[in-house]
Image 1 (cartoon, rainbow, N blue to C red):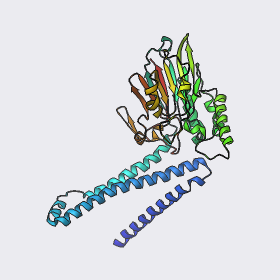
Image 2: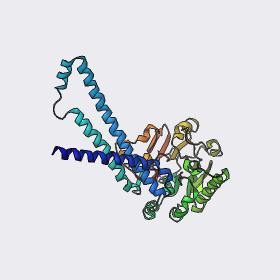
Image 3: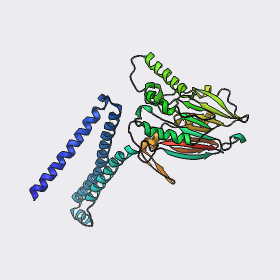
Image 4: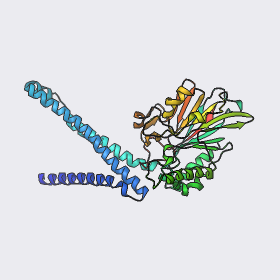
Length: 383
């Protein structure tokens, strides 16, 4: 019997280390996979497995520190140490920590696997937002806000169509898209023009660029090729019937009353993201007497420049964070690891008379799934 148990332990140990080696090797080979969808899943599963091992290692390290402490106490005073050790009742704490590490790691890993099925599970979030001095004609005015489509990651056309149908069903007066239409290249939109081209609104569809739209994360054969890609993407917006705002503003008119809409290129306060946006240029000619809505992809822009320098911008709409596609949300609590990087990362934020809404993203990037933070379509009603 003892030999049988030893054989089982050896087999489990061998399978565990084989799986670790396979996941690590698959992770290293990710840049060489030609199929982008296969690459996404291999990367996500491999990374998920390594994260679970890291989590278990942290818990086991805590247990090792505990054991080391008891050993040191025992060395200093063997009697005291023995007496202390004998006070432990029930499940020894080391066993508890071992099961805790395995439990937490397993929960994380299987949550990531479960999340693969949520990437097209679009959630409609309705938000009523009050703007000071809003003209009477715009009371109850409905705006659809979407962001971060990342068409290069999308594959299931029928599922994406359901998301677009949900947008159309709201019959919004205005649609605003706040950047990252593609992952890297304008050609990623070729198979999606007929789907996203269906998005229309009586007062138009307006869009801005996000950090991924500039092609900064791939190697181009020349500067001219990269510039052509950006021009091609600008043409894509035009072909969709979307008015791309490149550091400029427009007036939305209804019954001879106006709402001021401003859109800028990507601007981030984070060093690793570009500052292409020029808000001073975009604000030229803006009538401060009209409510101002700013479309800016990166929410870090709000506290860094908008709040201190442009107090008459009453509402800023952003995306970018995706809510990290992982977290916990309920009516009373929300959490995601992305909050350690971005102070404003999902939903509504206020500072005096200024407000920011951060959309959780329509698409996905890197990890082809969503855990707790679902893809979002926001319906804003002005009040």
